[in-house]
Length: 111
Length: 111
Image (cartoon, rainbow over all chains, first blue to last red; front, side):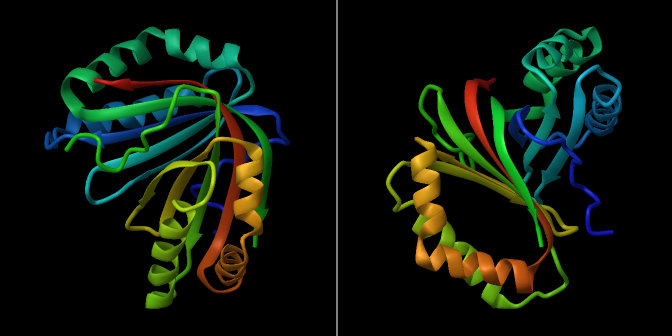
């Protein structure tokens, strides 16, 4: 299916959280389990619109999650289980990351 | 180096173009050559701030390019060589894509 892996977002405006990360050499399964759980949990949050996520063979990854509002992003940021997962990410799993919160103003797809 | 693969963007606000794409089965080297050329050419455009790009083994990719302004994004969109490359992307290389233009409002990195 052509649209697998794509978020089905509404007409803008809405918000995007762009999370770019470099995994370290730790290949523990705890990372994968936690990452899967966060995707599942995010999808249950109010204002969640979808996610697109890719990680390359070199460990660089980009995950973009889409949200209705900044308030929805802040609420998800304060979620206790997510807060714990982020702390493990910082201390155990990521060599480096950059997070950007952006307001989507235009969007289109193809072909 | 921890920051390889990351864009070194200034303090917000600035703009992000989030391009999510699914490659088709065509493994022609023309795609790779063109993709590399577009990265090189984008970096020469006024208002370009950086790029982050990942493609997974399943052919799903996310490329986020960062720009000073919407005007810079529009100028790059109108660049003749880029216009031709996009047309080849649509007709030859991508099964599907989504493009979103967003204004980055907050950003931070770690650890």
